[in-house]
Image (cartoon, rainbow, N blue to C red; front, side, top):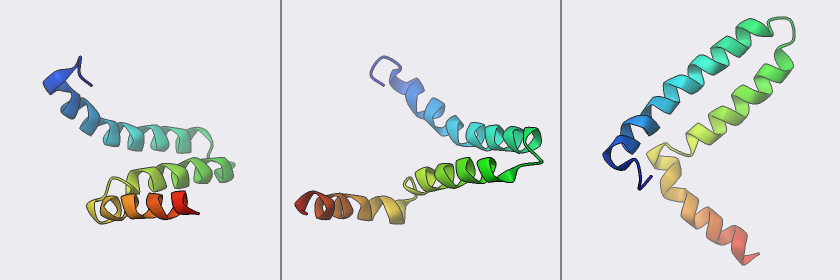
Length: 69
């Protein structure tokens, strides 16, 4: 991130549409068996959901609760 400097943010933002294209391509490839694709799509959606502001605000508290157990 340090080495890329100002270019880091645009590069990071383009990763979201790229993930969508990857999932679409994978869907086209595995049309017959959607189980594996569904797994990848679900994991990707959960990871991307952590980037949403309402979810991101609650993550530090959630991590603290897990650490205190």
